[in-house]
Length: 246
Image (cartoon, rainbow, N blue to C red; front, side, top):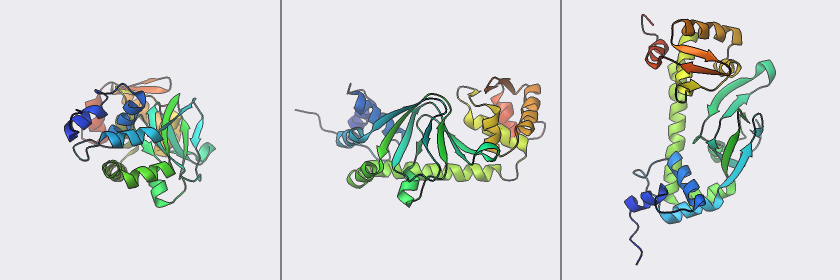
């Protein structure tokens, strides 16, 4: 007789401990990206349905995943690599955000019936997972626990974006730069070139370079080719907060 499915053993199945099926493991990873089991435990049926509708896409550096103004026809999840979200072109280009592994996009625009407000471009080799919006809508309507997780994920992302905007209001360029470096660091390294960081801050590259050189002289960071290493995270955090003596 099969064991009774409970929230606890269902979650063990979600983390891949009880299945070798790569499609189920992939779906379990997506489920964890949008929430944890304590809020809405998923059943094997939920996970199997998610696995059925997930697709993969590979992008090389510089390739476009979606363009500003496109209809929201897919819900994207970054599996690996980084996707730059930007508006405008050339000198008028502004980088809104960088999507990392586990980040989701396209669901909010689909639910609101709006086109995509930015272009998504791979900054390195990228693996994407995606759901067609008709499949996403089916999953949300037929699988209550999955819908609960996904809506909580949307609320969390919107709250984080609002918090980031509020945190940057009235900040100096040095404080904004320090905060951005801390936010974008992965294992103490920010894998982004200065032109991208400048676009994210909405400033010219020479202005950013002056700030970065000052932070480097203070021993907080080390500039590399197309990357920045954080040497003193605590000191950089104090700089981001504008604390005296920083």
